[in-house]
Image (cartoon, rainbow, N blue to C red; front, side):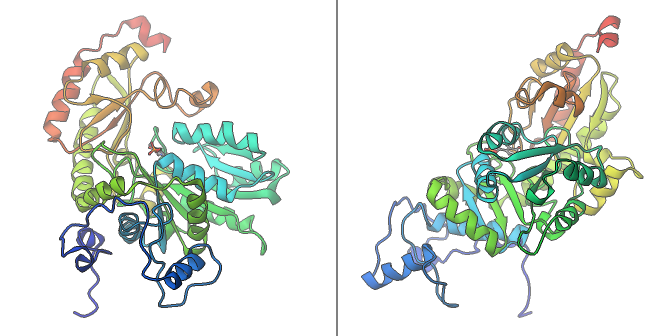
Length: 426
Ligand SMILES: *Cc1c(COP(=O)(O)O)cnc(C)c1O
């Protein structure tokens, strides 16, 4: 009994918060304050010594509150709670998913380094990797889901810069195609290129699955990243990001965050604390709904194909990775209509309950067109290579009754008109 270990979902209401420090309030208040009063000058001195790495923390010492760019109770409690899901040593929360991602890439990549990354990735990440990183002298090499680990190894060796490989960055499942990357296999590849002086790091964007259904750190990844705007926030009312990992890497991430000043605000952190209380029930309901919706779409005459983890065929490589790495098929469905942009837009324009908007993971179902919306900035040849075409519509399934979502999709699919010649030309 003494050693009972609570599930993360049971701790989301209380972990890391001491009511006695806040007048007994059951809920953590919003610490809307820029700075914190030190009891004595000696205490202020000690807090700064630790915050600025002047000396190591004594085992029993805690980093006291200094200034809200460095730390704040709402941020710290949120970070402590997020650590429970991924069993991470430490977490840093950011003002957006992109600031979490760009801070990690900036901290661990220096001019001359090589970054290897999976395709496709979120449109903003793709832009940062392909347009910003090369401008500061970082070389980038993308691989595709149909390339094996051995292929990627040869590609890395082929660059002549294998000794400069600094990081392998993965997004799995990939936005918007739902392609899976074998995290363990790429962690192993990173080891092959690591030396005693230099460890090749692995980072995984876990926004689609996390923090519930996939735990990249358990598969050996060094860093896990989130757009907390999506499932973690879950109500489409905030923008936020998070990074988790071991003490050593997170120490570096937090120092850069302090000096870029891109931490989350106390108010947004407070909203996320509220969101975390219902994270499990929201995500469970969303994936239940998505499974029913995907089964319906799969056999619809106006639909060519459906990419959903719950529909992966046994015996395939993707299915093997899914079984190894994910504990649920999630709630993101990508479908390809028969036809092209016209038919996809007819579907999108006819929806009544599902909203036509980018983003995902919220309580309401959303639909968008990756090729003309979120991924329009990705190189056109690359998009073709990744099967991001005009046929594609991405759905994020919310918590509505699945019957209603299906009704809505059914009436919108009925509005699609397709002529014989349009079928042929796409
Ligand atoms: C939305 C998203 C991001 C970017 O997050 P923001 O919170 O919008 O900055 C990164 N990765 C994935 C997979 C996303 O879906």
